[in-house]
Length: 327
Ligand SMILES: [Zn+2]
Image (cartoon, rainbow, N blue to C red; front, side, top):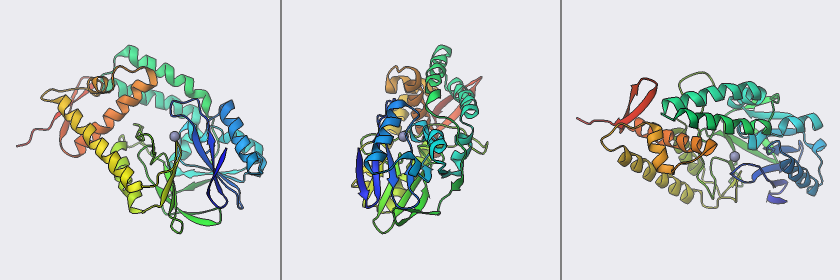
């Protein structure tokens, strides 16, 4: 099924095997025919993408360029396969390059990073193992693909007879890029703004080997950035478009402020690990969902720490958080 966004620019809804549900890919019909995101490497996703292209009078062989908005498998998993079929160029933000080009080895590194995060967060060993096992299931949903060109903040890309400016909006992922056309004021926001669900800024290592970036803090900063563009509409990667970006951002900020206050209350006068906060906050979750809950909790703790409201104490392998004493 394809939906018109602007003349020569269409959305194709592609199912995924993930809890998030379908992913929206975009196709720009004018030369060079461009696909923005591909969906994961899964038979149902492949079938829907091919059907969407054919509805627009295209086949995979017509695609000349594939732009990847961020390095999550639901967005780029099919890219390598498509490139084998059509020889298209692959463009993405430079932070995504190493993940796209070295999918298998980066996944192994990420497993070590996530294990380390869970250990520091006080997650029991059996639960750490369950998360590692559930991540293994996801391995087949993408494969490595060479990147032809990297994009960065301020670059301009021609799509559907319009010139779109690239905005780097890290948060949900470090290499997430959005595209804005100042004439129509259409923002292709992908996972930075989602209408139905709050976008989870997932903890991840720094692509350049530095300290772990505070993804939720970056996400919150870039929410305001999206409002400042004054988009008339934001077309998203999951669910429907956002017609009132300012209102949605206000709701999201309010949600994060409330969540941070709740965490402060839960800490009270004690010292707590991220796991000791995440479990009562989200309930007992299993596998990858328990990791996502932990990741979101760490994001809020990072934010409270940057505000000077909590501080860290390390005891052996585990990090504990407590309210920062004010003089
Ligand atoms: Zn996504």
